[in-house]
Length: 83
Image (cartoon, rainbow, N blue to C red; front, top):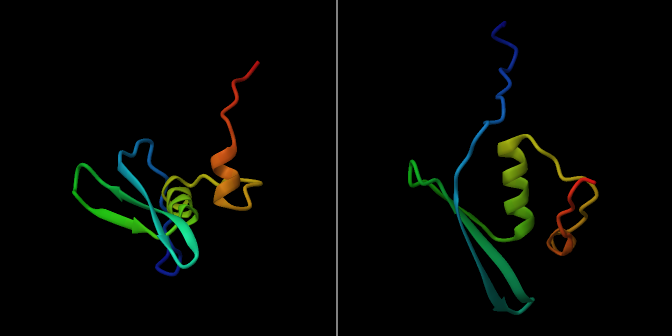
């Protein structure tokens, strides 16, 4: 690989986080906040919205949600089982 090429990072096969969720009320109504903590390193990352949390997880895993326009819609979807 030449020096000018960026090395692409492969998504991990496994990731573990402690997820904390809470609601804060304020001038714009209630907002969900979140934090993820890596149990191996203790590193903690905070998120001001579920959308930011999902974007972080998508980046970390290389997975993209499709068709979910906002975090409320994502929360209302139920898992489906293959038939």
